[in-house]
Image (cartoon, rainbow, N blue to C red; front, side, top):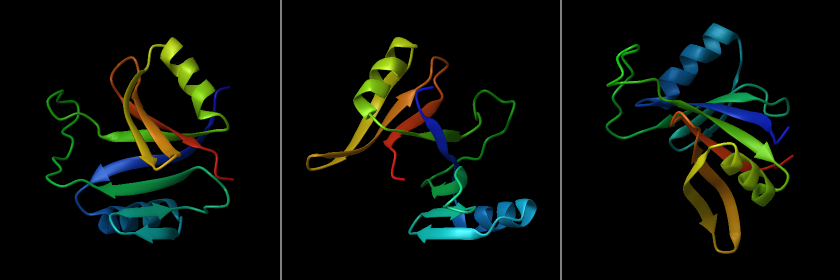
Length: 124
């Protein structure tokens, strides 16, 4: 095991509305609102589901490959450097590093089929 599932994230144009839909559907409370990011589920018992606003979002039209599914996984890891080495060996591609000064918050990768996922430091 490299890490553990922390968050499943949906891209959308209205995170509040989509979070409300899934909160009702799944019986999970809204547990965080932070600008264009809304989370449902008990944040003490991961994983949770998050909804992030994407400007100009075009909703998926599955199974149309021109408008594919738009979601990704956030995976918590204890050692992001070792985890990155492993996922790159497994065929992932690094897309982006999000950092603030000396602190790397998370790194974004594409899986071998091109789906994005993030490795993040385990905050628990």
